[in-house]
Length: 168
Image (cartoon, rainbow, N blue to C red; front, top):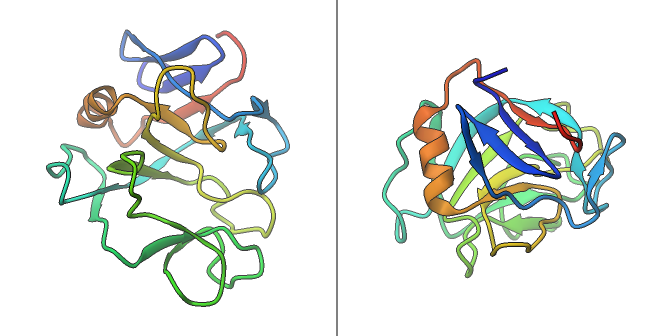
């Protein structure tokens, strides 16, 4: 669909434009598991956009927007009752820090991957800023910051992130 952000081995496409994209270091997986380094083959909704207010302006987006605070984390511990949810750091469970030293999460978008929070099915499939051309992610889709901002400004409620893993 034209309003979907299509992602595959060939890159990404949205609203007639092509973008470089980084995906999981082990490629694509139909059966996504926690820590496998793969991007899930799935059609996902974008839910909320988070940003670092000390580094970037609030994004133009038709999504809920949340400023990243210093104690924010995302639970990646299957034993945590808050697995695959926004959480507070230092609760005794493993969590990924949202306020990172690098720029990857200066602008980051939550998807509805594993919305049921099934332990071990994979957490935190985000759309975020890429580390650099050709640099893979832990399973997320990553874009240049300017490209991600462009995409978010044009995102509509019916748009989806379509991770295909194959040419479309």
